[in-house]
Length: 485
Ligand code: GDP
Image (cartoon, rainbow, N blue to C red; front, side, top):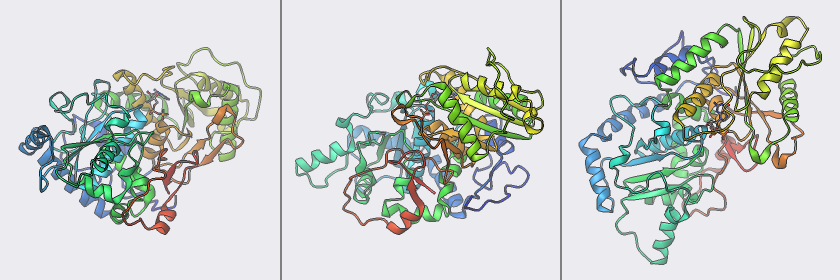
């Protein structure tokens, strides 16, 4: 780790070095108070400036949250069709759900960072599939948007429709030769992988958006590294995060806490299967349809990666036994190494199980346990129970000492970010071709922004290019993506 790899927090500092505010109800969100006992790495202490900013944010959130007079006033203004002239005390970013759980967690964190930078309040429009996933993150006030009373139609159904994008609105104003008159009551930001609104990352548009009380954020990306390319945000980000590698790590540990039902799944499983081991290795295997390869090749890639990066215990390369027929349990009872597999399928779990049970070698391989909590077979983001199980696995991965994750997978990005680990990232089989290099060690803990703005010509002053080059680089797993390092 390039940054401050310190031994804090001492003896389970449940508030993570001041990151979390005290005084919330312990019973309503047990994970908030207990997760520090499970994390293995605490590579970065939050900066004093970040702590001050978070406490300021919490006070603002309490003043402006649903249920307050200021919120009622802001909704009234929204109904009027235009933003208040001269600005209002409370302005908002409304997070809208888009894509799978990992994507959503990344856009929540990015949206929160944007709210911190711009003095806004983050509210989440949570659909039923996400209703009981996360705890309330802010003390004394809700972050849930009362979507049923919200005066914007079809809130969950807007998609990446160009017609509703901010860019379309700007184009319309230019075409009508409109001068900056009254600002609209809300603007819809299309910041998903199609990135309709690349203009969002220009200083002059940030200036214009300041006049809009409500921003509706539709994104499945970790767009934080692209905020750093906006000159107006660069200095503040530098102060908030002296180590750029810590942005997602600190903000996700601050913002995201599994709700009690998920936390019960996590802790029960952890205690039964992972806690007895001296060392835990998480292996997250995500197969995308557009980059699928035969399971034999994928398994070979995992083993080659492991050898290259020295991750899994080596066997004596005895022949591997036939896979066991069930995925309900595996490995030795009291392993020194627990391998936790997260995958939609049982195949790799079975292969790893038989690899270690077949190994005749002594030493480390004799006491390797392989575990998989579920194999759901298919993504089912519309189901709350499915999402709860997926979230449980993200946290189980984040409690490992070492990680192998899949390239391009936001599920993997979020797990390593929470863990504070630079994972070995399995490279994607683009065009279904097995990659020659099986994996690369991540240059930082940070997730990749898979769709940064390209070809957008901003008018405002550019960001400090040398500084950008020192802190933002091409992703290990995607040449068109960028990440902090
Ligand atoms: P990405 O598609 O890999 O970037 O990750 P997302 O989390 O955004 O979407 C994938 C979704 O598929 C997850 O949210 C889960 O619903 C499901 N999924 C994928 N891999 C796993 C896994 O290892 N375990 C579980 N329980 N669900 C998974």
